[in-house]
Image 1 (cartoon, helix red, strand yellow):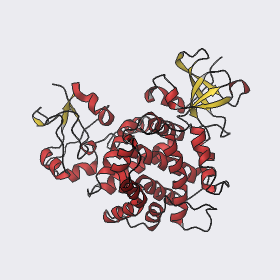
Image 2 (image 1 turned 90 degrees about the vertical axis):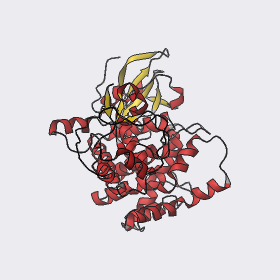
Image 3 (image 1 turned 45 degrees about the vertical axis):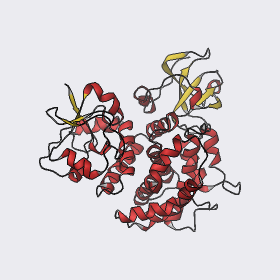
Image 4 (image 1 turned 135 degrees about the vertical axis):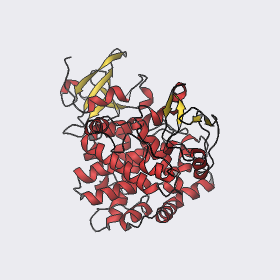
Length: 411
């Protein structure tokens, strides 16, 4: 039996285990399908062990959390809270400088998605705030080092599935807001960090409901509508219970659904954040698929946040479009050559990004992506293409390197 370590934080409370959990010697701790009912149950299961494992042959079931895990953690006689606090993850900063650089250059987006999913569902844990701080720091680091790659990964995840919807949605909104606040609105770093945390936690009062609704095919019930309408206040209550006292953060969460058109000047710090989050929230929600509806095209979703409730240009929405582009990294477009491409880098103009052709003019996969610059007249964009209409299987590992350095290739 080939055992591999698993991330304890990624074990979702209240859901069946996708495969059996074992200790270092292979002794069975919990069978596949066992439902961990609470953090206390998980603590009892782990006991004084510093690590738990799964059989490598079953690791595909856990791949979203544990692929390429490099665990060197050996903590004896530690409580579960301490284990969760140091985060069994390659992002702990416990690497050598070379390994840390490698991790930073090649983030495991599926792992970050799973970390966010577990964190947002475990709001009673006293490790919530440290885990949120780590996630926010990771997103900030990747957003600074490779904003195109960060947008690409999150928009790809948002458009390709409905599982873990709330986590993906929160990360995408957070990254979009931070890029706009930093590069366009020129907000100070401390304010941007607060904005990021507010965006990540805006829906924490309805995380489980949000995930269920992404899979629900029937219309909303009256009770669901009530819970949606009241979730902002519940989110604030939960955050205060877990120790959040930052007034701007709490105010941004409380008002993130408010429809308040008009300029950002004259508003409080929290309400300025709330308006930017509201615009990004609208875009990301329209972009993502649901069981009950198909997503809008990226350009349509982006343009919907450009105009406010009075059909005037919205300052926050315009900042978002200027920051991430009408054709954002990770979205699909059709070129004047009749080729289908995925956007890999933003251009100097919001409508002229660099793209990688995946389907040629005959409708066949290209094999290797072919980079085009859509600022050139022969490769101009003629339409957005919905994610569902692109039948070529995409790999983040294959395409993400193109977001770092895109060099034009011959026709």
